[in-house]
Every structure is written in C-alpha cells, then in structure tokens.
Length: 116
Image 1 (cartoon, rainbow, N blue to C red):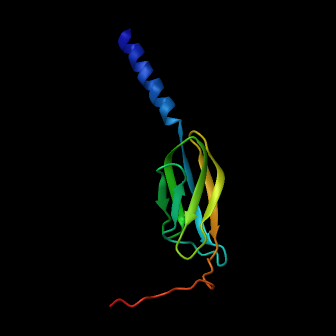
Image 2: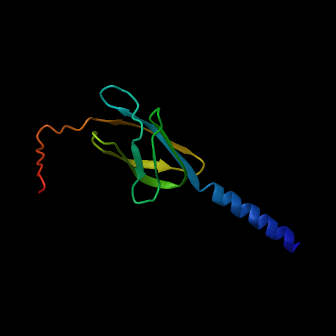
Image 3: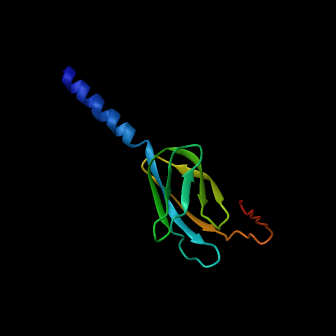
C-alpha cells in the first residue's frame, strides 16, 4: 500500500510540474519592408531566458514558467522594443509578432584619434 501511495504521489507531482510551464514564440520582422530579421536577440526581462531568431525571423522559448513577462527584441541597426504583459499560462503558447524599425544615426558624430 505504501508503494502504491508513493507511486501515485510521484505521478501527481510530475503532472503538476509539467503544467507549470508554457511557450513564448513569434516572429521578428523589419517594420518597413516586412522582411524577417535573422539573428535578432530575444530576451525575457528579469530572467535568464533568451534566444535568437532563425533565418525566417522566428523564435521559440520553451519551458517558460507561467507568469506575466516583458520581452525585449533587439538587433544592430534597429530600435529595440519591449513587449509588456506577455502572459504565459500552463501548457499554453504566448505568440508575439514584433516589428523593428531602423534606427537613425544621422546626427551622431564619430571621432577618431590616431595613435602615435
């Protein structure tokens, strides 16, 4: 009887833990052209979770604990964007599509100094 109770406890615990995670997935594109952005950085703020987009601009973060998050997308030459209120439920997928705008650098001055 003790073995049966222990086995049921283990099965119940595993099922509870499996339901505490979800997925965040989506696509990052250029806001002007609609082209996918390959290699964009995706970070779930205040966590250690993150990934990069594939050649189609898509990303997928698995085993995200349930909760509400802010997700940042960034790529060199584009303005970073933060998507707030991304809700991850147990055994569910939060899907976000992100459009990044080109970052203007017209008024920045670069100074070079020659060594020696």
